[in-house]
Image 1: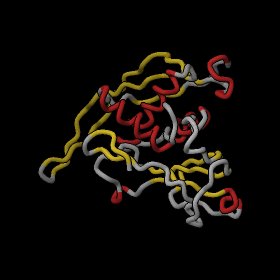
Image 2: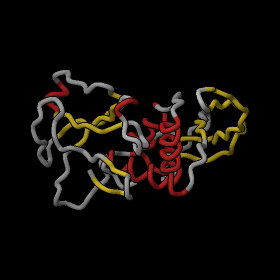
Image 3: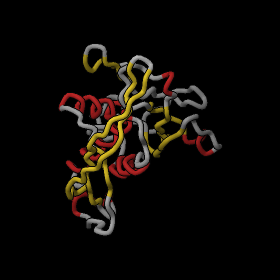
Image 4: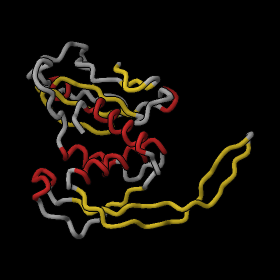
Length: 204
């Protein structure tokens, strides 16, 4: 575990194969996966609701899949003595953005919004404007549930046709991605970004 701010812990990649328990050696090919953490098992300060696990290439090819699998990518175990490099590519981030399209959990909505901000900063998403939508919000007080009308802001983005070409690629003009703005403050955005970077072991 590493300390980000007081009371805010992050689980870093283990460096072990979840299927066999053996250490993964630098330079070894493996599969990294994000898996869902059951709601009842999440820590209070867990902003993502996911953790990363690593699986050796042999175990993966033999059919092992970690419980709660959400997304995965193939990678190479880095040398701990070498300069830190990005452990995931932009295609992984874009896939996470798309996979979270139907999420309704507040934590996941914040996670998706931050991923969109990262991709926009990388010039892989183009901000096209915002749609304001009236929606119902529920809150519980003293055992009673009440609902009220709120105005949601959905940001509209155009993605690149092929993110592997970076910001030089063409825009997918016929596609629009809509991302809810969860109204995070600067501290909230920084915390989600840093936790995501630690879980993916990437510079974001």
